[in-house]
Length: 311
Image 1 (tube, rainbow, N blue to C red):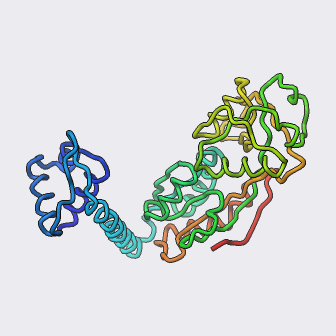
Image 2: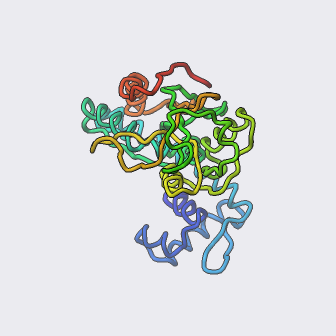
Image 3: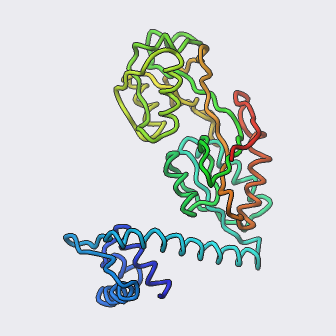
């Protein structure tokens, strides 16, 4: 089997059309179809079946795709490791992180690392917790900065800091003039939450339960800044991290008041994670040590630095 044919098969199995894959590969569509047919002959069973204008994997194809993906990822990681061994100054660090960390935590970490390693490249990906954890497990990211991974068997998670969550309310709300609040006082308020599958959604529901109520959910979103805008528009309240300063200065675009919660521990942990059973390439290993050393030093005063790891 040729590695390139396996890559083409993975693209098609992941939803790309034969035409799109052939164009990217700069070969003709019939040539790609013949290559995929040869692959099926080698495997001994059909891997793809036609569904309208696209090909979809058969049950055997889905199983084969899983193993092919792992093999190609390991091959690519091997190439990276050898390249960095030969020339460690020109490595690549694939890093995934939560959307909310892209404006304040990740930029100074990357910038300060590149002062000492100016030739190292970064591949940056922003997602929710479930997606970045999957990228780590699949090998698309060497490191992730996220909420706790809750005991994933292959992941080591090291706490970097504890981030406060504030009850964010609309301007003019009956709570807007206050600095502090018991979360229990918001039991009758409409809540705006992230969709299911996000750790902040789970944490919000858990904190509300600790305060003695189940939140009445009126809107669900996929990004914290969308939730913040919905609150500012008067559509409900939300437990959100405070807006962060950027290189341009403090964030002054958020008119929604932020209230400190006093009756429950309204915080979320943030940390760095990597695969326990995989040795990182030199550049990623160096960046891991940089983050573990530097992250608590660049956090704002309203954060509490943490330590320790959870396998």
